[in-house]
Length: 248
Image (cartoon, rainbow, N blue to C red; front, top):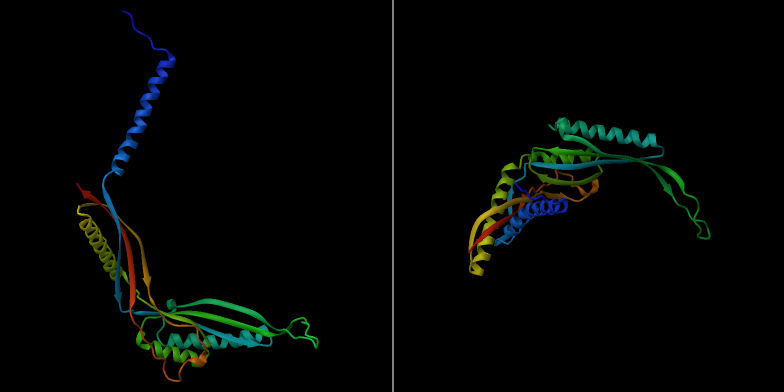
C-alpha cells in the first residue's frame, strides 16, 4: 500500500502551527476575560479608639570642658532618670536607648579686620536619648515632670498609640469594604446598569495614625506641676481595591 511521506519542511510547518495554536489559546482566553465588563473601585475605612499607651522620647544633654567631664555629667543624670522610671513601674522592655552622641564644641573667633581665625575647641557635648513606653497613661504627666526635675532637658515628642490595635484595624477593614461596595453601587446606578458579583478584592495598605502630642521642647517649657496631658484618639485607616462584574 502506498503511504504518502511528508517532507521534513512540511512536518516542521505542521509542528509550528500546532505550537502556535497552543500558545494563542490562553492568550485569547485572557483577552476574552479582559473584555468582560467590570468596574474597579477603591474603598477607604477608618476606626478611632482611645489610646492606651504613649511613646515618649526623652533626652539628656550635658556640656563639659572635656569629653570625660560631659560624659560623666550625662551618665549621672540619665542614671537618675532611668531609676525614677523603673521606680514608677516602667518595665525594662519599655526602656530603650535610641541615640547617643559626643560632639566637640567650637568657637569661631574673628580678627580685628573681620577675617576668620581658626576655630577654637572650647569643650564637648554629650547627648543621650531614651525611648520610653508608658502603658499607664494616668501617670504620664507625673512621669514627665519627675524626669525633667532629674535632668531631662530635651524631648523628641510624644505619640499616643495602642498596644493591640487588631480590633480597630479589623473594624477599619470592614468599613473599607462597605465603602467600596457603596461606591460601586452608586456608580452603576448612575450609569443605569446592574452590579454583579465580586471578582477580585485586595487590601493595599493599612495606616496607623497615632496622635502626636508634643513638639521637641526644653526643660523650661514644662510647668512646675505635673504636665497636663490630653490623649485624644488614635485613628487607623485601611484601603481596599475591589473589582465587580457588570450584569448585561
